[in-house]
Image (cartoon, rainbow, N blue to C red; front, side, top):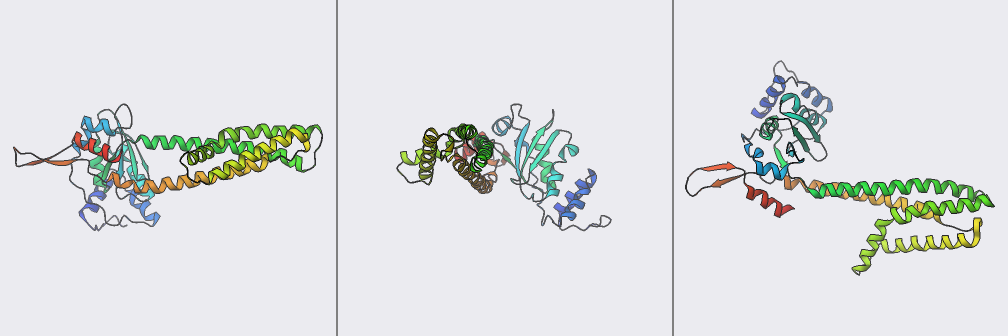
Length: 315
């Protein structure tokens, strides 16, 4: 782009260009050109004052921390690394902004204010950049989902560590080691199998139990039966045969590790797909025009009833 004699497709594009040049952020266009992408038709500023974002009732419902200085916004139109760079430069453009982080995958920006900062000023500046901001309500389900994902990763980690050590002992047993070492390695394999059976494999037990309780078929039922039968049979053979027993701990450990990994990847793919559809809820209006019977004028203002309505409709 030639900055000496710029040509704009619309007033919104010219407005964004002026803001960036005045703020010393002209490198935005260089980054955009380097990615080979363009913004397409930029959104015109809406002219909304966004004063309702600083209404105490609204902040209480949408705040992301106890101080009420952090809020998240879904931004229309972000799509590349240059967009991330531009949004995260907000602290340099507005003194009231402490930090700005944009999740490009979700198009959600987390804004944290300093003392004296206002969300209305932030929203106006973002709108002026060409990204229409929509406040995102704090969703407890997201936090619970993230906590469950971390627990799932912990189960996979425990299974992976135990499985690696079981495989080392199995290599020695398959190589023909006998006597005291064979017995020791077999019992150590059994000991390492216990955290996999009683911690890592818990999701399969829960799913199978739920299926039986609701009288429906689930693939986890034969999986659990196979795991239990293999573990019991391996333990019985271990008691009977000592170091030369036919145990199946290495096979069971590898099977559970692979199934846990595939379940986690499937789970994350489903969550990502559902997250894309949940973008629609951010497009709901956060303010409304109230028509008063005593006045012919309609005023735009935040409404606690809107917050209540959104709570009942989506959460």
